[in-house]
Image 1 (tube, rainbow, N blue to C red):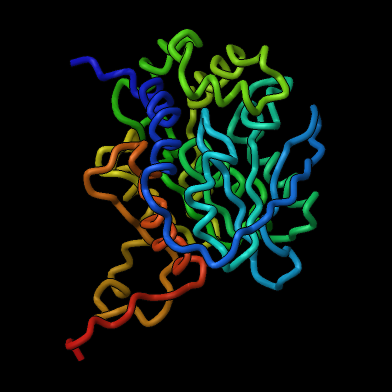
Image 2: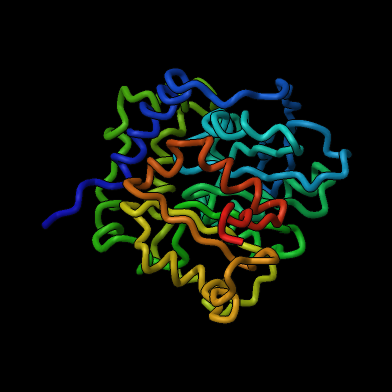
Length: 309
């Protein structure tokens, strides 16, 4: 049985569903409106645009936010509006948003180096990092290539090799064409933000080949020291078995820890599999994401159930 055109459908769904979600679902109360400061970080072949929310000199570890493919920093607003207790750096990754297309391919490694350049430009030695989909691949590569830059790591809907995705995913990716997105809200949003409107087809073609041959060594992932939160949907493009493998590589599933009646200290890895959630649905409930991410970043454990002890 042929799989549906997963990534094209995902991109189109993002283009239509995310803005509607932001408009029709009331957000949780926000303590204050954060005015973002726009800046750009020089990279070898251009510059990467980013936005600073809050005070980087506050003493709190900032959160670096990396969006998914065919998204932008603006598309992360439903989540970032809920995070008002710490500074944030939200990036328009190469090929996307106000950064636009840059020379050369779009690879996870290049996106990771761009993110490191953003942190250096913002004079941030180390940040917590959240990435979704393509942004999660960039976040994981940031931890692998620049481990000194990453404190806590949150990766939503990511695989570290091709086998981690549903069977047929690579073949379906190969069928995507720029024409798939003609007239879509995603194409209109690209044109609204980009400084390189002529490059839409180029960006689509670059994203098509990002995952080809992807195979990041398990031992390198095991050796990372950043506490890690892994999030997927139970109907994600990423296979649940693969997310569990990543969870175990990051120190999850320890028998001695699991045998405790409750956790007394923060574990090195956490795993969330959202029920009834596709790849897109993972980002469909920003309040739920914030409720998982913020306690993790603060090394909180869950409260003892009332009435048990």
